[in-house]
Length: 286
Image (cartoon, rainbow, N blue to C red; front, top):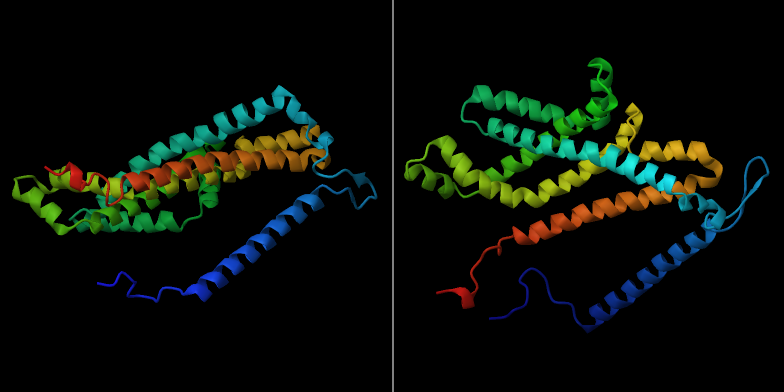
C-alpha cells in the first residue's frame, strides 16, 4: 500500500528546491526589514517645534529603569495588584459562570435552555468595553468591580459555549452508558459527560483566559490602575517626550511574557488532553 497522500501529490525535487529558495528570500526580507526598523528607531529626529531628540536606543531614554520605584510601580502596583488581580478573579468567576451557562443551555427543559441561549448570545455579542462602561455608570460601581464583572460576563459566555460544544462532541454512547447503569440524567451529565468535555475543551478555555488577561487593558478607560494606566502615570511624571517609547516597550514585553506563558500552558494542556493522552502503548498492553 502506498504511503503517499490521497489528497495531494508529494512535491518533487524542483518544488522542494523552489520552496527552500522562497523561504530563504522571505526570511531575508523580513530580517532586513527588522534590522532597518531597529536602525531607524535609533536615529535622532526633529520635532515639530524644531527640537532635536536623541534616538530611541539612547541610554538617556532608559535611565529611569535604574530606579527601583519605577519597577515597583509597573510590576507590583500595575501588573500584580492591577492587571493580575482583576484577571485572576475574573478568570475564576468566568469558569463558574461558564459551567452554569453550559448546564442551563443544555438543559432538557426549554424554559431553562431558551433563556440561557438568549443570555449567551447577548453577552457574546456585547463588547467588553461597553459592559465596563455600563456597569460603571449605570450601576455606580468602582473601576475594579466594573472590570471584573464585565470580563466575567463576557468570557463566561464564551467558556459556556465552548463547554457546550465539548458536550455535543461526545459520542451518544457515553450518555446511554450512564443511564443504563441507573444514573439519572443529571448524574450522567456531572459524572460521565462533563469531565470528558471539560478535559477536551481545556486548551480552548486556557486560550480564552489569555484573551481575558489582554482585555484588562481596556480598564484604562474606566480609570482602573492596571499596568497600562500606571505606565501613563509614569510617562506624565517623568516626561512623555523622553520616556514614552521606553515605558511602552517595557509594558509590551511584560504583556508578551505573561501571555506567552499562558499560551505555553495551553499548548501543554493540548498535548496532554489530545486523543493519544492516556492511551496504552503496545509495550504497556497486558
